Amino acid sequence: MTFPSRHEMKPWRSRTYLDAANFQSCVICEESDGTVVSCHLPLMGAAPAGTGQKCSDIISVHCCRKCHVYLDGEGRKDYHVRLMAICRTLIRNVDDGLLVVNG
Ligand SMILES: [Zn+2]
Image 1 (tube, rainbow, N blue to C red):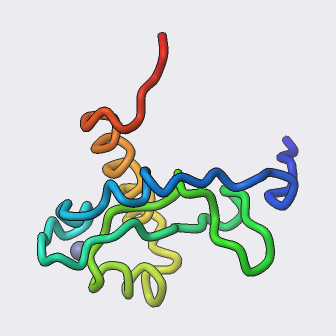
Image 2: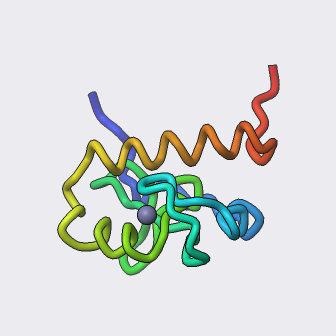
């Protein structure tokens, strides 16, 4: 099975999508300490991103500063937590009406 190079796909961008993290709880630790933002979460070629470019905004998670530091550091290969965070953020955004599936 072959996939197109992630460099051939254009990253999806949405300020509205990213700003939805404001005032939310962290999807990993459930903390609501005012530090929760949308954190881009590259997944080893799964999401388009050029050199020095963030992955698509759709691959971002609502997480607090502490969890963001973890994901960017020692949790870089913690794929269970990374996948869980993406799923929880997507479900939250569907539940909140930010992501709408037609049909
Ligand atoms: Zn957290």
